[in-house]
Length: 475
Image 1 (cartoon, rainbow, N blue to C red):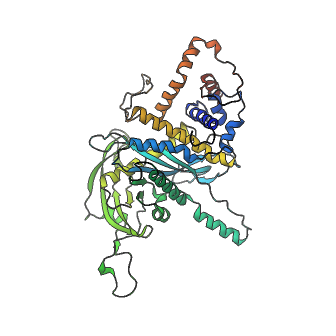
Image 2: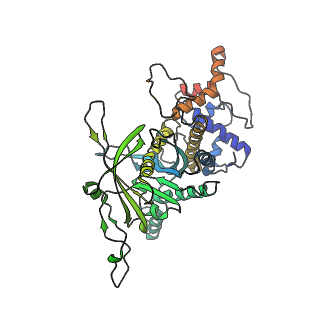
Image 3: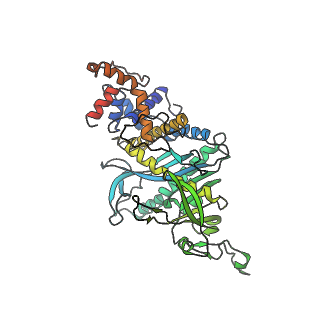
């Protein structure tokens, strides 16, 4: 509650945060109020929490970062994953909504959706090693920033307005937001005990492997990202590359492109094991270091890593299929290959965050139109989800069975690497509503009861009857 101006505002946020996780129907603000048993009371203060009250979304994630640092060994770097996601919207007056390319559309037909765009940065909490290999990691959100598009002027607007629009597009885009997120995380690490000495490693996809992010990253920060297969790389300049007179060369001889390195039989493959998709796999990689790329600049040596396609079968005995090769660059040529490969494979867990946030937590389902609410309510929901994951890691560690609600008999009994977000939510609901379920079973005729009027903000007490009624009504 330290991030709120008043104590009662913090209590209201705590009540809505727990309701965000325990809600059974759609995660609208009316749904959260129903879960808290406040559907018959004045709701204006709960809406003002997002539209008017003084608090910053960054303050909600501060305890999560401190908890992550407390669980990491002192000699480990801080690894994070960065990616953006879309929240589908149908309203035409919601701030930040624009037409976006649907990432789930087929390759042969591009679809467009109306959505808000958010940038997420998640810290990666490593699990226990498996078979002598670094184990899986859980991604826990640390930032959730709204990145709206710059309003486009009309066609008949004066040239000065169009020039100002182009300048804003250079300053306010997804790449500049990514740089701001990385710099903010680096600043937050330096401000905490034991965080300033840690190396920050950020894994991202190809959309952030560009000049803006590579040259704008802060000190003591390493970026691992995908690169184009036809990227033009160079070796560092040698004395033989310099002319006796004239301008000094900043780049040496051309180096093979990532695709050429993949097809070069003179460069041997190296086999390495890493954890991915729930088990340990063997990967074949090639590497070349140091190399230079004009996007990163002449003073940024890079390591190029090529990962051969991994074979897989859709079913036992099926045809062996292959995925596409992956081409990576790392801004730290001295980083060992084994952790470099594992850090990048951990990045996939941020996609699990996006799925959980939309399907389980209901991020983006709140029907708000105020500019501040459109920015802060999704971040508030993601912060609640991050605290749930951190609390689960602190309470149960990597034990996949501790605290889990018993599964039905017909469910397959297979080993789970960890408790999922759904398991943690079920356990939270059991703690909140365990006594209420017993009371309902004993006194079913008293399913619904009135509530006394109360204008203050009391301690949180979840209402199972109200939550069930809201879900049964199709909310």
